[in-house]
Image (cartoon, rainbow, N blue to C red; front, top):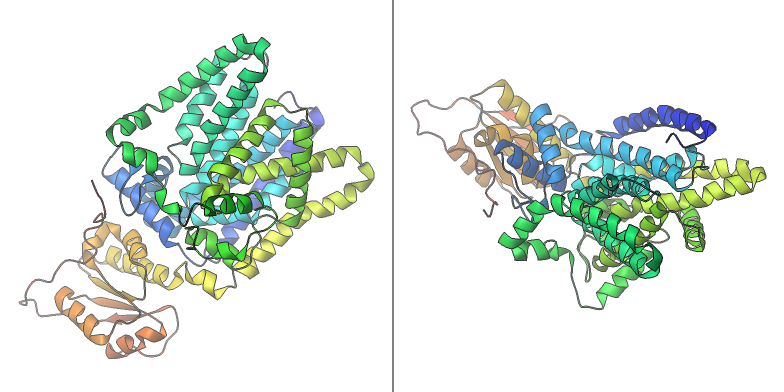
Length: 527
C-alpha cells in the first residue's frame, strides 16, 4: 500500500481504525440475540473439526456426520472448540473474525483496483452487507470462500506487475490450490484463473514468453498445494469428482433457470428459493432462514452501483485484479449457479458485487464533487438497512429463529454445566429436535447424556429412558407438545426455555444403568 497517495493512506488508517472495532462491536451486540442459537449445520461442522483435532487425523475431506466436507476451516473451528470448550462462541468467533477480515481485505483490493478510491466507500458497502454479517454470526465454513478470493486478488495484482518475481506467481498458485481445501465453492477460483490465463495466451501472442514464465510458476505453486488432493483423487476418484452432488435436483432444464436467477441475485431473489428444498434446488437453513424472512441479500444501493460497475469494468481499462474479479464472477455464476442462488455457496461472490459497486461509486465521487453529499447519504443506506433487516425482519421472525433451536441450545448448555460440575451426574434431555446440538455441547461427557427426541414423545417413553439410564436430572423443553411429559415428572409453572427436574437417588444395589444413547459420537463415520 506504499504506492498509494499519502492522503489515501491516511484515510485508510482512519477508516480501519474506526470502522473495524465498530463492526466487531456490532457482531458482539448481535451474538446471543440474532440468530437465537447455534444452528445444527454449524454444530455438525464443529463436531467434524473436533473429530479431526481429537483423533489427529490429516484428511482432505471429512466423512464424519453426513456428506463429505472440506477440512481446512474445520481444523480451525475444531481447534477453537478444543481451546475454548464446547460453547456457542467457540464456533462463531472464528467466523466473526473472518467476516471482519473480509471487510478489511475488500478495502485493500478496492484500493489496488483504483488507488483513488476513498477507503470509506468499499468499507461501508462491505461492512453494511447483511449477507456477510449473517455468515459471520453463524459459524459455517463458507465464510472461508470470500477470504481466499480476496487474498488471491491481492497476490495476483502484485504478481502481474511488470518484472514481478516468479515467487509471487507461485504464491498465487499455492493459495489457489490451498483454497480448495476450505470450501467447495473455492474450486471456482483456480478454474477462473486458468480460463483467464488461457485467454491471455490466445490474445497476447507477443507476450507469450512472459506469460509462459508466469503460468509455469503459478502452476507449480498450484501443484504443490494440490498434492494431498491429487493423492485423494487417485484413492477415491468418485468421492473427489462428485462431492456435493446432493445440491443438484430436478430435470436438466432447472440448470439454466438456476443460473438465470443466480445472475440476477443482486437485484431479486425469487420466493421459490426461500424454501430449503425445491423442485430444482437443495439449500441449507442458514441461507433460507434469512431470505425466507424477507431480508434482501444485496441492498438496493449496492445493486445499482454493481450494475454500473459492471459497465465500467467491461469498458476498461482493466487492471489484472479487476479482470480476475470478472472471471470469478462469470465462472461462479455459471458453475455455482446451476444448483440455484444459494447464499451459502454464492458467498464466494459477495466481494465481487461490492468491489464493482465500489468502483462505480468511487468514479462518481471523483467525477461529480457536487454530488458527494448525496453519495454519502447513499453509502449509509447499506448499513442502516442491513441493521434494521437483521434485527427486526430476521431477528423478529419466529419461523426463522426457530431453526436456530434456542431452547435446545439452552438445554444442552445447561446439561454441559451440570455434567462439568458433577462427574457422576447423568442428564436426560427431552426435546422436539436437536440431536446434533446436544452432541456438540456435551461431546466431552457424551456417555452421561441421554436424548429423547420428538414432538410426539409421551410420558411412557421418558419413563423407559429413566429406567434404563437412571439420570439425576431431567431437562424438558418448555413446549406444548411436551407439556404432558413435564407434568408427569412433577414440573409446573416457572419461566425459561425448559424445565429442570431433579430426580431422587436410585438404589445403589440396582443394576448398572446403560450409557447414554449419544455415546457413539461419530456413529455416522463411514471410514
